[in-house]
Length: 139
Image (cartoon, rainbow, N blue to C red; front, side, top):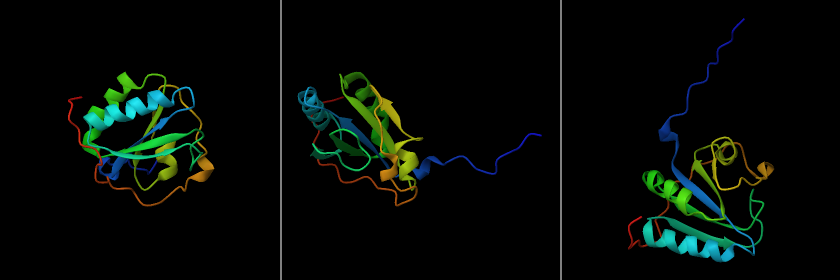
């Protein structure tokens, strides 16, 4: 007997903003710094702090890039072309942080592990923050 699900598809309006997590190690830190500057020069984003120690669900040092929904269609393809040896996790911010970092995420470069036990299944969606960059170069 065939069963049907009562679940409805997610609405795009559930996405309040996006994050990209740029992962690095000692060998790729200079590349990560260069990529960070390139993004600052080209995109209205909020560049987070460098995290040399593990933080949250992330298994490697990283920094976060927060951006509005309307930046996604230009930033993410640009990252696909310019990430070099770096791994990048891109995820939406909805009210489901665990799913956002796992089921709803995409990887650019080599996928890495996520410590999913560090994430709640439900929470507040993070709205796009005020960009702290002033782009001067076209993407």
